[in-house]
Image (cartoon, rainbow, N blue to C red):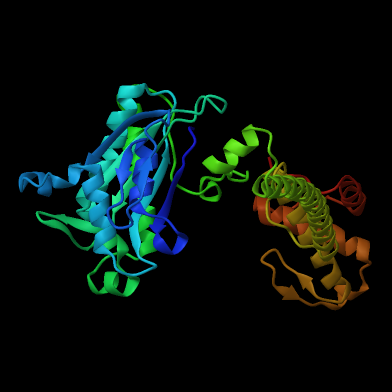
Length: 388
């Protein structure tokens, strides 16, 4: 996964900035500001690989080419605004995959600039910058200056939809400004990934936040060109020190969070084990209860049907013997029959008779008359015969 970076910043007079100065610096050219009389000369600046102005396709069809002149375009942007806090341009800063060569980078940035120009009917002035000679040599990036007004044959027109308030956007059936920025970020990711697939490169970029991607790390922080240059010269800056403190604090929070997560996982494992032990104790208690009450539990794993049938017969025999002890003998069909002779029988004798009744019911035959009490007692000691 390559690094995704796209930031949007306004070029506003309230911050003391001008579109003419911003364009001159990004393109490393000389631009004269006709409003203030200032001349911004950055023609000696190095590291600019390519600069170009892209216009909407609709403007090209109407043969509108005046805005391809950098000084004419941004002087028109300055003249079109009359407030002291006006936004005269909008800047997009994007990181470029270092795996691309110069021509591929230019083609990718041009396609993104064209998409913005067509979407908002504005002019887009882009410049591709190479990495600083003393910095990370993979840091290829581009600056895109977009006009805040539409391109017309005689100059700049109305404000683009990107500059509208949310109330006006809603009335026009457009997304909110926040959702519109998400769309722009996604557009850059899609164009970049399409180019990477075209070149058979496996890397991809993702416009989503780290949290949405399931990545647990802090986002990277950019110092900015001025602060970065001072830091490279060994000059300690307040911004650099603040970012260093924030990085250390973020690292400490990650360590504490990892420790807390580990503690919670250990507690969860211990709780799960105790629940399993408790469940085992409950199941054992249920089995003991069923045994004492003579209930037949549901078939469990590891127990055969023959074992369950034997337990059922023994439970039935115990129940019959208990009722016979109270003077209520059950016949083979389970009906009660009382008799004075039954009340005189001992509990052992009644249990033996119950065994015989069970056997007669299962086999459908009467016992021979010569079967005596001794044989019955022997069978009782051996236990009831089991069905095959």
